[in-house]
Length: 434
Image 1 (cartoon, helix red, strand yellow):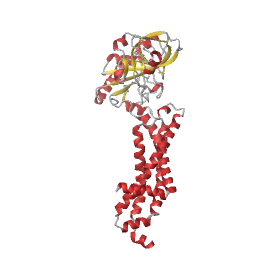
Image 2 (cartoon, rainbow, N blue to C red):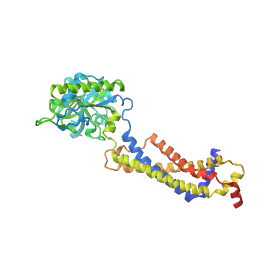
Image 3 (cartoon, rainbow, N blue to C red):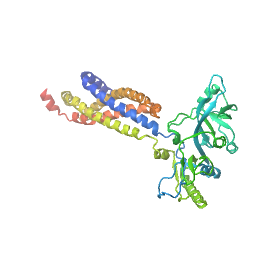
Image 4 (cartoon, one colour):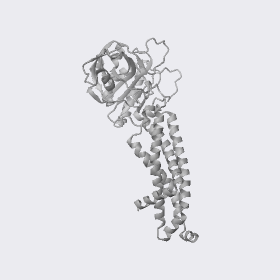
C-alpha cells in the first residue's frame, strides 16, 4: 500500500502545485537553517579522542597567595614550571605530559625556500602515546632524551612535504632559531580541532608543525606563546625560570581507568598540602581533575553565539512546521469529497490517516532535498566568516543522513493533525454534498 499511497502523493503534488511548493519551501528553509547550525555545533562539541577521553585528565593546582582567597573558588588553569616538572618526576600516573605552545623561525637551507615561521609544541615524551598521534615515519622521542635535553624534533606531515618532498626525513636535521634539530619522527595527518590539549594558544589554530622536548625549549630559551599568570609579592624577571611563581604550563595525565581519578586527585591534594607545609603554597589543597569532555565543557570550547544560533535555528524550524501544519490542513480538507468517496467505498479511517501521512512524508523528503542545498549554502557562508572555527564547517555523511531523517520526521509530525482531521471526514455528508 505504501507504493500506492506514494503514487497518490505525487499526483496530488501536480494538482496543487502552489500549495505543495509553499510546503516544500517552508520545510526546506527550516531544515537548511537547523542543519547549518547543528553541523557547526557538532563539529565544535564532538569528542576529539573518543577511545580514551574518559581516561585523559587535565590537572589543576592552586599555588596562589593567601590574599583574596575564597574557599571553593576555581584554581589556576595552568601549572607553574616547578609543579609540572615535580609531578612529572614523581610519575604517579601511567602516562603524563607537560606542555606549552610556541613558535620560531625555521631555516630550510634550500635555495628555493626562504626562512619562515612555524608553530611549535614543547612537550614531554608521553605526549605521543597519550594522544595517539599517528606516525608516517619514525616515532616520538624517549624519556631519556627528555632528561638529556636532546635536540630532537617531530615534524608534521605538511612540513615534511615542504622541506623533504614527503620523503622519510628521520635522521636528518632541521634548523630552528639557529639550532640544528635531528628529526626522529614525522606525524601522519593529525590536527585535532578544537585543540583540546591546549586551548590557551587558540582553540582552532592552525596545526603545529614542529614538536620539541620541553627540556630542550627551556635549555635553548625558545619563544613561547599562550597565557601566563604571575602572582606573588616579588618582581619577576624571568617568568620561565624554575622557581618563579608563574602559571603557564599545561599538564595532562592518562589513567588506566576512569575509576582511578579519585585516587589520583587524592594524590594531588596530598601534594598540595606538602607544598603548603614547605611554604610554597599558602592556600589549602584546591585541585581539579577533569577528563577531556569535562575540560572542554568547563572552558566553553563551543562559543556561546554558536549555541544561540542553533537554538534560534530550531525555533525557526518550529515556526516553519506550524506553517506546514496549516498548509497541509488546508490541502487535505479541500479534498474532503475525495476522502468521503474512499470512505464510502470501504477505506477505513486508519487507511486515510496512512495515506495523508505518506503524503506529508513525501513533502518532507522533497523539503529535505532542497533543505540540503540550503544547508550547503549556509555552511559555505559560515566558511567565509572570519571566525577561527569557520574552516571546520563541512557536512559529513552522518549529518547528510540526519538532514533527510529530520526533514521526514518533521513533516510527519506536522502531518499528524491534518491527517487526523482528514480521517474524521463523514462519508455521508460528503456524498450528499456531491
